[in-house]
Image (tube, rainbow, N blue to C red; front, side, top):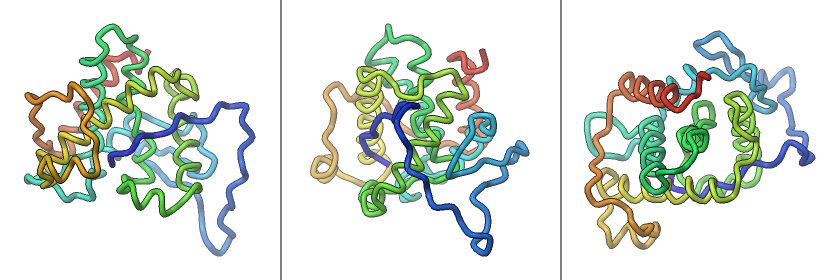
Length: 217
């Protein structure tokens, strides 16, 4: 959901030990369709596969599914839009940072997409789990655990642009209503129209963009 995300902590930052479920509470890992088992509290880059990310993000809805159209606006499609906006805003940006833009919401393939106020209500534990997953994703695909600040700002700006477009085109907000909770970034395009895609098509487009940006290299 629309939110300015913090950069991930550096690998050298001491991490608070997260409480693990007891034997009676069950497991803290999730089995992926690829066969990987991802520990959500202590994720390993080895257990992260792009096909799982694409599949999951294509089935996670933005705005809790409260959008117009036959299909919800998926996080996979949102990620593609954000990468496109980053490239439009900074055409000389290195390809690896465009890949980082595509993957900016990757943790949501296992923890879902929550509206911003609810994230804040959950407090630091949600952010810590999200940050750990983000670091693992970055390492898995050859990105630094913590992005350079200019890159992070560029992605956040594009993320806010995408949020504005989604709010006013799909989520039922008038521009006046959207302006009360979302600040429209300068140069947000007026000619970019959004049409939510079926999950399989969104996942396929996400994978194609990932490979085009050198994710498999």
